[in-house]
Image (cartoon, rainbow, N blue to C red; front, side, top):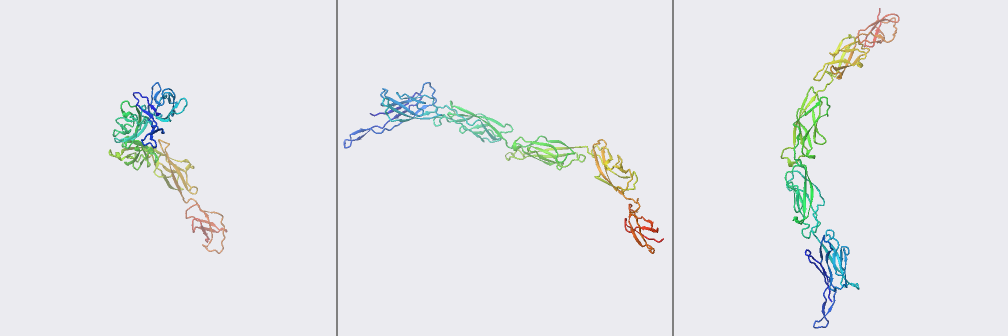
Length: 544
């Protein structure tokens, strides 16, 4: 008897009818051998099975188990003699079958995004003998999608940066929303993008999700940060579609579109005249509204009477100009200077050169402040000569010092005590005249080195000093004397003028006209006559 197993899908008004027929091949009649009339004997051949898929909507919310379909054999007479069996994925846990009627139900809520396809096997057996009545048939239960998932931005919220002053249409960031629904079924996963917040500065491409600049010449110095809200809606954006949103925090990055401007057109500074070279006088700032390297500056003195006296450098932050002393200052010679200083961007952007060069100029006026300086001698050192027989009170010279300050205070003079402990000299308090206080002796001290002090009368702390060298000149104030006892002999027939010996007198005097008369060993009168040099003299015998 010919049989077939029907798998039928119970449907309601919103479920399409799908009929799975498991059909064997029909018996095929072949002519009997030797039968000219072509009569045939019926023979059973191997069954072949044909099936369709079950389509079941996901997310069933009814109170009763969800009906999937029915398993039925043509051999089933309705007497309960046939037992239907269901095996495979989810059998017994997700799907159950009534073994008498063949009705299949889902006893768990199905979610296509979790599992979209189940593979099951169906069989009809004799309930008493457990013998298979039909070959085992494989069937598929495919979970049909409904629009139960909204689009999601998996990486949001987003951070993006775009240069300020960008042109309209400049790309900012590419967004992609993911919809877990089936993209091959209906419009559940067809996403359309729109912008909810951030107009008119930015826009989004409805199809691609590319966010772009939509307003030209946005200035970072005016506004730097923007918050943009993007929506992705499925069902092609139609009414009833599900939507998801994300936030983009967009920052305008800086470009060098602003020229530097000095805070002041005229800077007033002051510096002590005693400031050493390299001393900082002050600083100036050409303020640039840009940031980072776009605000880096370089300064230089381009004009003014202080170009050779002062210098300028850029501080380590590359923002400020530091003015420093280049040469020593003197209030009395020049009390003020004027500098013309230029500040220039070190990283100009040629794109924004049309407004003009990225530099500015200012004037710096530097006042030199007077410092109370010690008296200044008109010579770095003094030298004088004085004969040793000079009388006490002899003026040997004058030293002169003055107050170099504008006040020109009166100067008082004195001799530093340790330089003239024996007080040979005296200096007049107001005139600076040096004179002797004691007799000098070249043979005892031939040189005197004294230190003269000059002090401001109104400020005794302001003291300066100078060295005075005094050379004592010799005068003929010492007779010569023999260094030891001298004895000599002369023959009785010695001739007049005959040199007999040489005497060495001790000479302390430096004159040339000394003569000494004395008697020989026998008390002969003798005369010592100088003949050669200062220290060696000869004596001769003169007849008396």
